[in-house]
Image (cartoon, rainbow, N blue to C red):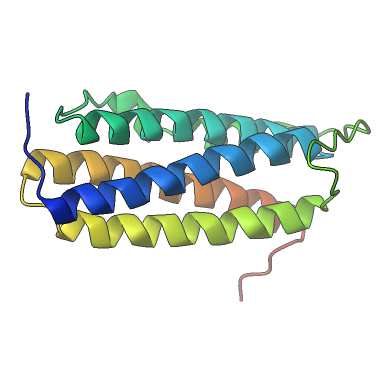
Length: 162
């Protein structure tokens, strides 16, 4: 199915593309730095879903409506968050800067909040309902990523929702 994008729609998708690229970079780098194996699994799973988001955005930019796999609604990061945790003492420092697991979680939770909000704005700017549905699907997955990180943080005493 072919779509024609307005200049504004194209600009918004280009912004979302940059957001997805940054999410992939963060999840990849942080998965390599995470000390906790459970957290490493969450970061790897969320990063993989971010790659599918980037692919979907690229398809939209090329004028095609991507096929959305409804199985993706179940966050693989959430499944990873429910698994047991063991500490991994190998801390790969790909960027040369070692962040604590708590700081990485805080950064990614803030990132997911921002990206989800940006999708909300983008969704309202599109004329085509099919594109809105794709963007809404991605936004829901971004929220699931945030939920997995939040639940991990809460379970480890890093986040106290009052």
